[in-house]
Figure 1 (cartoon, helix red, strand yellow):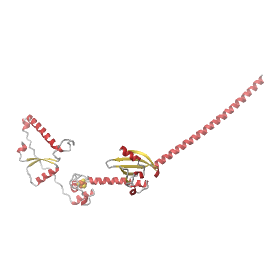
Figure 2 (cartoon, rainbow, N blue to C red):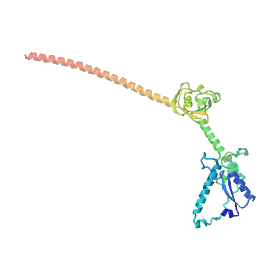
Figure 3 (tube, rainbow, N blue to C red):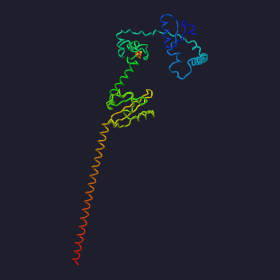
Figure 4 (tube, rainbow, N blue to C red):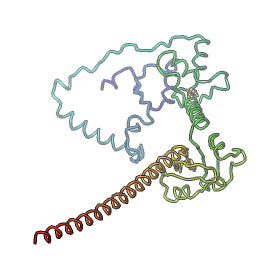
Length: 321
Ligand code: SF4
């Protein structure tokens, strides 16, 4: 009733585009005295992000919701107390309009520069940051409403730069192959280890440089290989091999850590241990032999002593008789 008796015409407007049009019309005084229910989401809250994705068509939802609300309203209104029915619902609103501060061209350009927008063509105006243009976004940064790095194309190119740096300077051999196991790329460490030119090896089968059995296994099982020792005798290398399967990108990513030196040291230590054991065995054997010889000699002399004493005893006994 309040709305009906008011001089303001009610209007429910949803979606950002429609609201912009309505607010433009208000600013131009093309429309006046309207009470706008402004909904950012298409169709209002019923079309908002909290609505389950698989729910019914928005118009079906709207009609059902309206019927339900109407039933509730009628039922509840009957139970209102007199005091509730006479409630004064008039509210006063104050102007909360936000006046955007003005910024100089130089200030705006400085912010644009921070995300690599040095010239007009660098401003992609893709809207991924939520602003209509790169300039609007730069102004919001100056207003303290957003962060300068919050630009999808910029963040993506930065991430690519970082991954390129990792690829270029990683101490591990990194190779990328497609699902047919053809080489797409090989980092400089790999090129050096296999003594090949990357340009020459690109699009060649992986098996032309290393055995591809493990990569085939990963393709078959669709499971990453966490780590396996692999001897690449052809290159005098022992590597610790990990393979990552990226089905969305349709590639396999091989990371080979060179453990040749570690393995050599391990082998040396094992050889040293074996030599020590062998020497210990020889010493023990020799000691045993000496002990046996000593025991033999002792046994011999004991027997001789016994025989001499018996002879002596016999002589003494014979003399006494
Ligand atoms: S995401 Fe970046 S490129 Fe796209 S409009 Fe925003 S600032 Fe411009």
